[in-house]
Image (cartoon, rainbow, N blue to C red; front, side, top):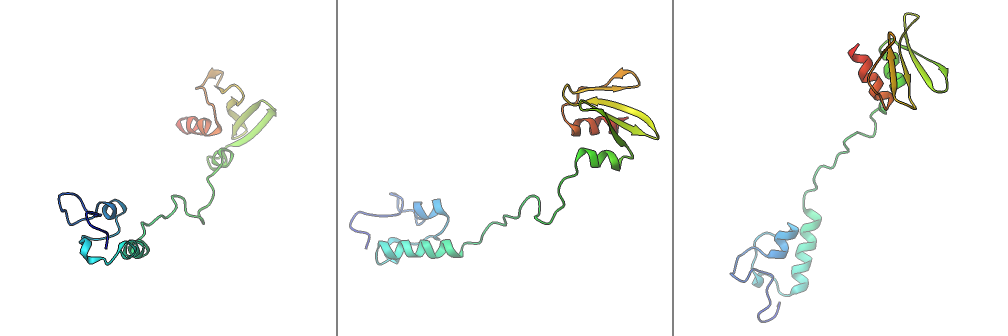
Length: 131
């Protein structure tokens, strides 16, 4: 027995044990349903083992292909990437420079006009898609 005055239930006699509700493991039962504290704990442990698991499928399945790099996305758009220097990237379409990007500064240029500031290759691709 749990002992005189000892209870895993609320003081007002609620049939649902506080501890069990908090853990979500034992349905409404009375103290007298258990011969001792060990039996109560065993019932909780048993219910923990049979409680249905939440489907924890990964957000990105293991067999999914890795995300496409900005270089691959540019190629998908029919653009060739040229690097005239270590600090400059050119996006070429039909042997014509469509846009320039300086990654270290984020500066872009198109038709001798400044484009938006692009911090990453993904930013440049998003901008190029609007052209």
